[in-house]
Length: 182
Image (cartoon, rainbow, N blue to C red; front, side, top):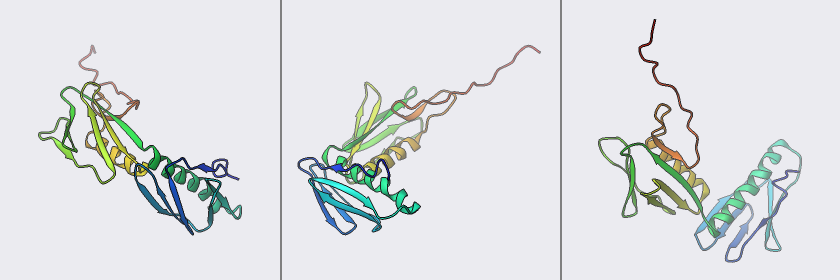
């Protein structure tokens, strides 16, 4: 039995879960998420907890067991407290600013790169710490939007300039050796 899959998902107060076969709808203070899961995995609501079960030891079922539980836990956590990814802006003259609800990135191009947040996502910038926060209730969407922002100017290995995740280590390379003695 999957060690992750056998753990029940606790449902906090203020979160409602509706099960219709393999269709799960989770509604909370931050938003509402809906997803259709594989019908070979059983999902039950017992004692204010979601319990995930499987019928056999088939490798396909075993693979889906823990994944289904993790996705359900992320849905419940997202609608109750939300998710956040922090990016750092590194480089001389590089900065990020808010223009209304849109994000404007000044990262060495001849023009600012403007990004509009999709529904359910919000941006926040801090000029002092040079950070961009991507916040939302759908973990998958928050991670994808953060990856799209990072893709505008990924960190380069020679000077370390660019957009990177908070705490990300960039492997630095040595530059040219220059003119040396022969």
